[in-house]
Image (cartoon, rainbow, N blue to C red):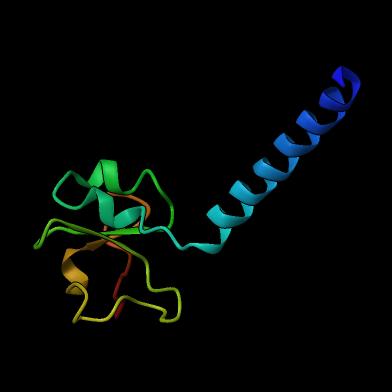
Length: 92
């Protein structure tokens, strides 16, 4: 009986651990959105986040567009990667 328990318990833990990992990967998390109202530095610790100065919102960067749409955050107020720099330049 004890030998069976020594085999069954690790197998049960393995299956339980795999189920937890797979469940975590299948549910999208909104990590960036949990940083709303904090600071640009807190938001941009995650490289997938975009900080909007005007609204103090931290949102997941919209990777399907090259630049964030104005409806999400005006470009002058959008920060990603670094809090102190603007991510575009205009040349003559």
